[in-house]
Length: 109
Length: 266
Length: 148
Image 1 (tube, rainbow over the protein chains, first blue to last red):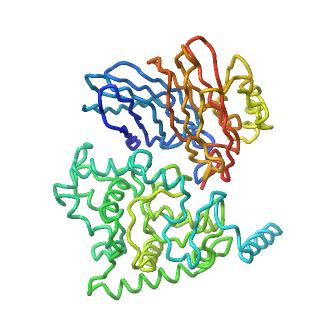
Image 2: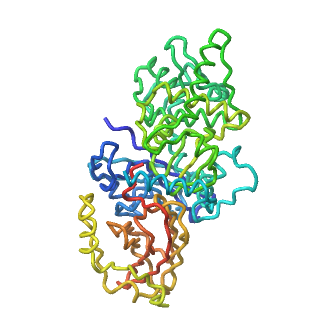
Image 3: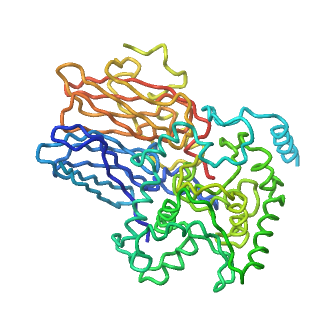
C-alpha cells in the first residue's frame, strides 16, 4: 500500500475578477525516472506523473505532458484568469502506474 | 590497494589545502568561526528563496499534511482528540531524544509519533512514513525558535548520561573504509566542499529536512545513516541505539541553538 | 533575433539515437527515449518575446528553478510550450498545452539536469509558427544517477 501523494494548490495575488493569478501546484510524487538504483543496487523502475490537467470551473485550461526531467516534488506555476463569478480550480494528475490524484481550491472573491 | 592510497592522498590533500569553500554559487559564509552556524547558513541564496516562500517550498506539502492529520481531516484519527490544540505542543519537539523507561531505550520524536499512533485505529509504520514525517514537521515547526531542552528526569539521569557519553564517543570514533570520525568533517573541515556539497557543523536544528538529493523528506535517523554510508561504513538499521545516542549528543552539542523548523537542504 | 553564436557545442537535439545509445551504454536506462519533433532546428527560430530565468550556476542538478515569460507576436496567441534539455536522457521535460488563447504566459517549474547544458523553451502559436530561446547553466551534481 503506497503512501499518499501529498499535493498542494495555492495562488499568489489578491483574488479579484479579471485578476491574473499565479497558481502553484506541487505534488510529492517520487517521480522515479528509472535511472536511479536503490540501496541494494537494484534499478528503481520508472514511475512519474506523465499528465497534469488544470480545470477552471470544469473547463480544461491547461494540459501538461511531463518527462523525467521534472523534479520531485513536481512544481508547476501557471496563470489563472479569475472569472467574474469566481469558481473552482481543479488539478488532476496521472502517473505511469495508472494512479490518479485530484486537488481543488475555491477562488473566493 | 592502490585505490585506497589514492583515496587517502586525495582526502589528505583536501584536508591540508583550504578549499574555495562551497558550491560554485557564493554562499557568503561569514568570516570567523563557523562551528555555531546552522545548516541554514550553508544554503545558497536561490535555495533560501525557495525555502522562504511557502508556495515553492517542498516542505509545505508535509506541513499541510501534518496540519490535516492533527485535526483528523485526512482519514486518520485526530491527534487533537488527545493532545488538543497544536499550540499546546509548543515544547514537545524540544525534549527529544528522551530515555523511555517503558522501552528501556532512547527514543526520538519520530519514535514517539509511531508509539502514539499505535493507540489509534490506524497505527503508522516506519520512521520515514509520509504521515510520521508530516507530524514531525508540524511539531518541529511549532517549536521553531525554542532551544533544545533535553533535561533528563532525576531517576533516569545516570542512564541518560551513559547514553550521552556513548554518543560523544561515537562522534569521535573513526569508522568506515574512509576511516573518518564525525569530528573530522564537522568540526575540523567546516566550509570545505565534499561530494558536491559544503560541510556544515552538522547541527540538527533543521530536522526533519527536505533533502534535494533524496528528493523527499527525511528524519535525523535517515540523515545519520546516510553519513555512515558517506564514509563507507556499515549502515546501522533505522532506530539503532547508536543513531539515538548520536542524536542526543548532537543536540547537546547544539545547546543554545534554536530549532528552525523543517528545512530545505541540498 | 537568432542566437547561433551562443549555441552550446554539445547541442544535439537532432540525434536522439546518440542520446539513447549513451543511455543504454550506461546500463541504467529502461525508459524509451523521447523524440523531439520540430519543424526546423531550434537555433534557427526567433527568440523574440521569450524571456527566460535560469541560474548560470545551479546549486544542485536535482532542482534547478526555471521561469519563462512568453509574449506572442501581435495578432497571435499561444497554443503550447515545450521545455527541452538536450543533455538529459529524456530531453523533452515538459509539453504544456494552453487552452485559453492568451497573448502572454508565465510558466515556472523546477527541473532535474543530467549535465551542464542550456535549457530550451519552444513556444507554439496558433498560426503554426514557433519561436525558441535558450539559457545555459552549469551544475556540479547530476540528478539522474545519484544514489545517495
